[in-house]
Image (cartoon, rainbow, N blue to C red; front, side, top):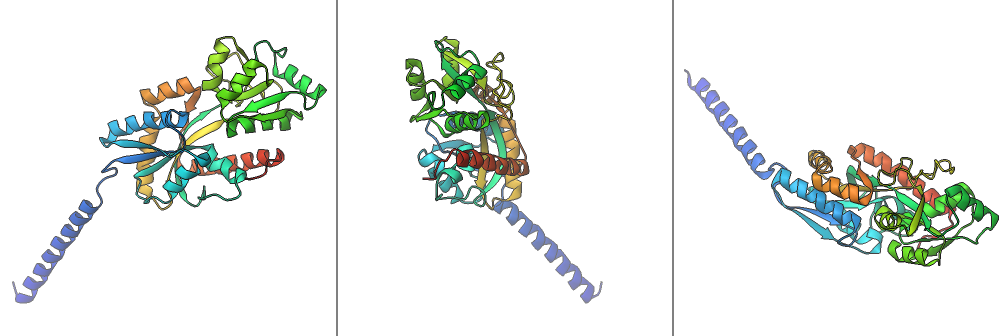
Length: 328
């Protein structure tokens, strides 16, 4: 072997060794995701439906990855505190927003200025669940159906009243007014349970409330269910027609849960999170949550969630504008 050939082979071997070394370093610097604890940020208080779902999902993710999941409740300002915190977090997949239509469809229409951009500041991961609400009246009410309730509302505009203690409950009532062309007085409450108390006491005539608040009162015989708010009947109340079935064509106002990470999070990390959370919605803990809350698992691709969010934002904006609600 001549000296030139020997040098070439030596250089080639050195280059190969360097390549392997760099590859090893890269592997060491970028371990498989997740390599440490993940934080699920929840925009609502501990014990809320979103919090319960986040904890159920976290159990499954920990089982699958052997990494802990920490649930961080950042309640307040209609979810804006939590959304802003996640928007400003490192885009590495270790800070995940487990949220609802409140932060990513309604808020931009309810507030003049947001501390985050629900589209530009986030990368969608997956839908997590969907749920509906139930239109209820006092058990002693003369109204036995949606049709009877609306007939009374048309006969005496502004006489009947509906209560609400959440944005979803409020918008469900406003959409009913708009699609049925009736005038029903809105009475605001700080929470749906407070509105239920007044409904039981006869201070208001009706409300459209979440299932976890309404179903116990329905099953105890204190409230009467007239209609369900989404296009598919509830498995918890299979004999209760949807509001659309009851005659209000096109009525569909539910709520949803979804997961987002900061914009710029690497696509492979988003894909892995999508896989983990999709599996988590099928876990026994998640199934128990969905059954109790009267909702159901709903998973999507990131692209599907982005399209769904855009459609929901438009729908909520239309209802809010038509209701004459001015942004705060």
